[in-house]
Image 1 (tube, rainbow, N blue to C red):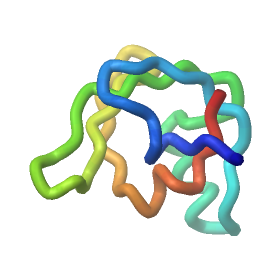
Image 2 (cartoon, rainbow, N blue to C red; image 1 turned 90 degrees about the horizontal axis):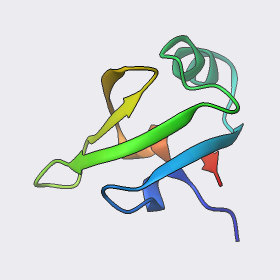
Image 3 (cartoon, rainbow, N blue to C red; image 1 turned 120 degrees about the horizontal axis):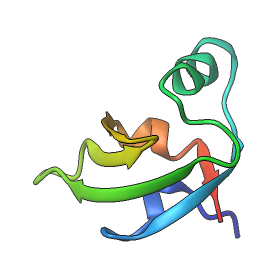
Image 4 (tube, helix red, strand yellow; image 1 turned 180 degrees about the vertical axis):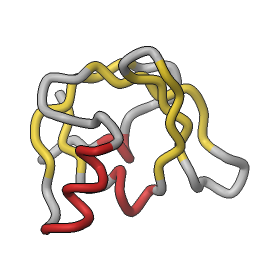
Length: 74
């Protein structure tokens, strides 16, 4: 089964394996610095489960679960 950023537990650091999704969405995720090989730490999840608070490349990023689901990690 494919592991995505959405399934990553809080406090865990994972490595981006592959970006799924099409065109503009994929481009936007890449523009935020989420690219293959990037280490991403899940800091916390908002009370209602959206968005996820991440740390990558030395900065913090909030990402919707729908987007996190397109990011395959290892």
